[in-house]
Amino acid sequence: MYRKSFDQSTSINYVINLSSIGDSVCALIPLIYLVKNHGQHDLKIWLGKDKNDLYLPFIPEKYINYTYDHFKEVNRTFPTKVASERLPISNTNGNLTDYFCWSLLNRQLELEDKIYPKYPVDTIDVSRFNIDFSKCVVLCVNYIWLNKVFLSQTWNDVIDYILSIGLTPLILGKNMEMEHEHPDNKFKVETGKKVNFDKCVNLLNQTTLKEVVKIISMSKMIIGPDNGLLHVAGMTDTPVVGAYTVKSHTDLMPVRRNKQGKAELGFKVYPIIPEIECRFCVSNMLVSFNHDFRYCFYNDYRCVREITGEVVINKIKEVLKDANNNKI
Image (cartoon, rainbow, N blue to C red; front, side, top):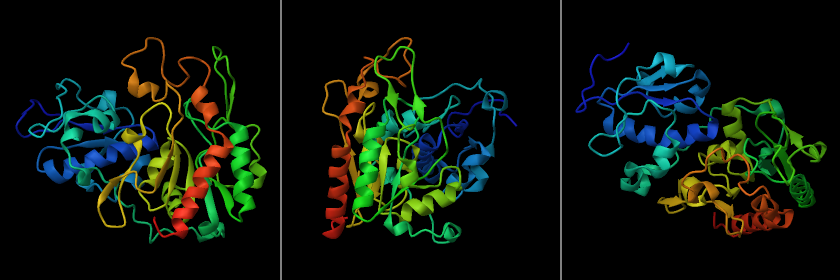
């Protein structure tokens, strides 16, 4: 299974992706680049089978290997190399999200090489739900990071507005714990217990990954903080209202083809950026011991509280106006 020696001129060590759906989408873009430009080398892409539906439309199956414990299955004695045009990558230590966002190779790539691939949805059938998705607004209500959330009141204001203009609020994704609290928090972040889910179409835990992509592609827009579903939406033509707090939107927004067919960072993305001095804390901080960035460094969550219902509703209006004017 393993190479006995490492030939730097012809071999690309194992590329591994065993992470969440958002990181998996981010990693897919450089993997497509590697297959396209370095597929003649010994390239192995390791992933869990739950990522099959995401990767197989874009990555030839001959490059894919499956794993659930890469620490045991992959030979980690090979050195990790710096990404470059000459030696593209040798990564045995996790997913490629950081590599894509910040590596030397990323800075060398043209914008055309960073385009999110369009997911093929024509043959995906979602008729079993009997819902007119063209009138739906997808809401991303589940999060892992506390400093990437909408408060309950924000969601309730948004839901009421969506209903008032004749559209349907639709919840997608996995059913996760909806209230988060950390013992050190001065400010309690409630993200779900007080949301009026009974006013929404709730499809949590009822869809496959393929169905999620299809539903998003058919919907009016998708709304939420930086999370996995927003990255999935980047593989469709659906407008995105996205809030960016812990990392810069220029790192995280998808590159899509605009109406002129050119690659454009954040095409059809309407960013919400809190106007506070500590925004993009992960992007601006080199190191913080004993802090995993899932919580506010200052324990006041100012960025979260800046994302009010009014702010989000103004972005919804902007999307609808641009759509009516055929700008998107």
